[in-house]
Length: 432
Image (cartoon, rainbow, N blue to C red):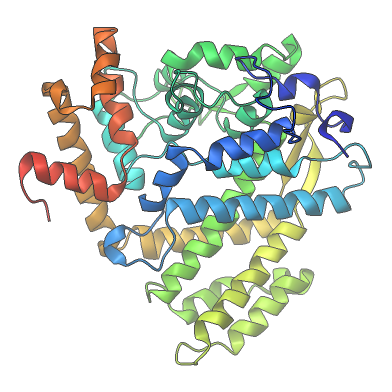
């Protein structure tokens, strides 16, 4: 089935902001397959290999990086897509989720994350507080639409792909205005104000009712000064968000067990929930494997991987397609991917274990503290002396003095963890 024959998508899903004909009449790829190629061949994608996922570069080279996490998220997202296409009654011949679109968006979902993970994000947001702020998801959108490529047009991806990565359809400044000014962490937003024109193009294809639905927000808590959170996202984005959570809850926890940050007995206690074990065959199989698992076994790592493979299968095979919008809506806003409540509770329990035993561990917090300091010192140096920046970035600053801080922010956000450490060593002396 060709993309043009797939009624799940509309013509505008395949549109690009800058219209160009295919470079070759021999190019038989669909528009979404071309998006996939542009992403994996981008410099931003390659840089993910040296960016922190959960565990920093100082803890070895066995655990996941942002690159391997993105690849595993894409593989899980593809598995969910194939499962839904096969099992969902709403998805019939000629009306299917496109795997290439889902995979491409999943590969791109973390492109905008800066060096040193969450700590690097908070540091950049604090540095940019007066200049438009910083948020990893919003920087992903900026990378895809502005920074990659020679012409300043970004990767010129399809509207369908871009909607697949907009996790929080709200402008940063609109979200920030709701927050306490003393809060260091950025608001949850997927677009900076300086990129609002591209976001408006993204929304042009929506009807007034669809636009209102897509941009709807709800205040968190009863305090009138509390921030508002977005309520909706595209179907593919909801699917990728689940795949991202699954990868975080399983693969990062697997790394933690292998590094002895979490012991086997702790993992067994989290998994061995009778209600879930009795309801899901895959979960029962994982618990049975845990009963036979011991760190001193010769094949411990291989057996542990089988446990997490069963857990992932339980999540993937039981995700459901649910309807959240009326029949008049485009399919990508009408449907959403959801996980049953009991499996959602199990996922949250696994993620909480990662938070408690990994993210809050002294080893991880130490590197996080150092990373935050490195980012702040780099920002200070490049803002004080723009001649330290690459020539191309200096030209961007000359085009408008108001862009200085955003250009510096873009440059630092694109750094890998090792490169950021190397640059701060050059500027200030050894930080190690």
